[in-house]
Image (cartoon, rainbow over all chains, first blue to last red; front, top):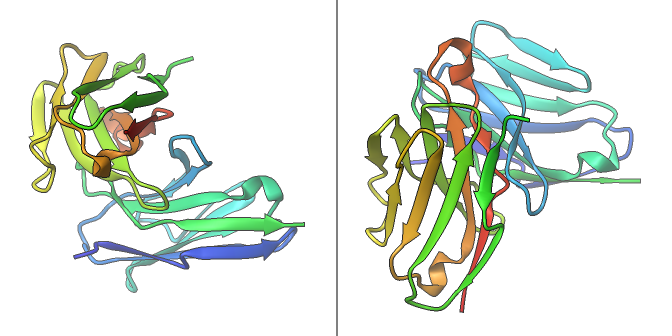
Length: 111
Length: 115
C-alpha cells in the first residue's frame, strides 16, 4: 500500500514557466511534509517543508500548497530554470518516524 | 561544515563477496538511517537506529546488516551481495530534539556495483 502518491512521474517545463508537482497521502496522522530535491549522483537535499497547520509556505521561487481536507500537497516552482532540472520527491512523516517517500518526479527545464 | 559523510563514494565488489559501506556524521544526531535507492526510484528504507536501538524494516533482506558503534558512525554490511543489490546506498540522520526532528539530512551516497 503506497502511503504517498506522487504525480507526474516526469515533467518538462519551459524556462520561466511554472512547475507543479502533486502528492496525495492516506495517513491522516502525518504531521510533516517535506520536499526533497535530488541531482544525479547526489543524495536528496531538503528543499522546503510544511506542517498541516498552514495552507501555504513560500521560500523564494518554491511554494508548497497544502490541502488538509483533500489530503494533498503540491510543490510549485515559479520562474523555472534549467538548474532546477532534478528529481523531486515528496515525503511525509508522523512524529519521529522515518519519512515515507513518493516515487519521485523527474523535472526537465528546457530553454 | 556539519555534514553526513559516506565512504567510499563508489564501491565495486564481486558477486557474493562481503562489502561494508560507512557513514559518519558531525551533526551529533541521534537517529541514523540507511536507504537503498535504485535507478529512477524513491529511496527505500532498510533500517534505522534511534540511539543504539536498531529498527529493521520488515522487508529488508537478512543479507543486509548494520552496526552503529557510536553516535557518529554507522556501517552497512552486505554479507553476500547479489546482482540485485547494485544500487545507491544513502545514509541519513535526524535529531529528535524539537523542530530539528523534522529534517532528515542525507549523505551523498555510495554507489555499489556488483560484478
